[in-house]
Amino acid sequence: MRAEGAFVHEGKRAKVVDLPGTYSLLAGSVDEEVARDFVLFGRPDVTVVVVDATRLERNLNLVLQILEITDRVVVFLNLVDEARRHGIAVDSSRLERELGVPVVQGVAREGAGIDDLVSAVHEVALGTHAVSAVRVEQHTAEVEAALEELAPVIQDAFPEVPNPRWVALRLLNADEAVEGAVLSGELGQLSHDESGAVVEIAPVEARQRVRKTAMSLRWGLPSDFQDVVTGRAYEVAEQIAARVQVRGLKKVGFAFDRKMDQWLTSRIFGFPLMLFILAAVFWITIEGANIPSSILATVLIDNGHGALKALAAGLGIPLWLDGLLLDGVYLATAWVVAVMLPPMAIFFPLFTLLED
Image (cartoon, rainbow, N blue to C red):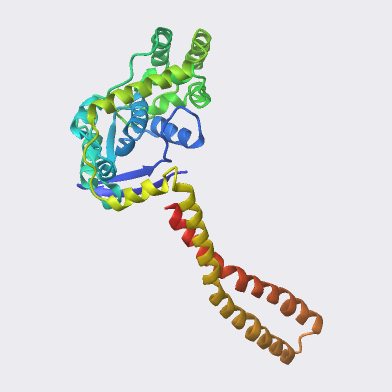
């Protein structure tokens, strides 16, 4: 579900945990729960959110959700070359001001911007880079009233939680994982005191009070509560993206690729071209497999089978065993390899190229 690694920067050893890719922490899929639970319960010193510069609005929704949990965040604006190719530029400095956390742009596959990213992570981890993360504050009146009532109850029970509003949102949405963390007291283990000792688990009465308050307030919310919360996050993400993006720039490079895209996705030529390409792939597969299939048949069946039969006779192997192993198992396997392997070796690489 996740990968781990480590590196050393300016004499400090850092552990890196690569979480599953996700666009949201709210929907409740396994990947989203893994990412959400680690950010909330794993106590990371810094959370790096990799954002696709070509899909900024959609990715900012995730950034805003993570900022509801922690402000120790660095945003890596990836694929800026692809964005520029599509005529999109992102003002990373303004995006940093909008979000209140460091924003580093680059191209991960080429290693561009990685050094700046590591430096930003280092500064946030040490506290030398001050952060003031933006948070989605304005919900409907009913949601705001419920949050204002529930958040203090959570804060009283779990004073170490950095943002009780986010926990309140998840409890109001009946998030089973967060509710379980409240009841077990795990939610209170988010922070350590200065001595490094784990904070004491909240009393049972306080945990039950949080749960009962959340359940009571939940009934007073509209049935589309989750849609309202999600919609507000997307609205804010859209507003931020509109302020930091510049669209309509002259597209650069890859003119041939764009021309191919126009032809292959054309309403008129798209399907005929697709059928032609598939026909070409099948023709190459069938014709190209004839020679290697013939070679394999000669080696494995014409020559190999006879040689093995002679060897078996010389060793005095019983006829029934000879027939079972050589005329049965070996011969069947040899035919399958000779007939099936060459076309598969040709077809699947070609199909992979088409997918790419």
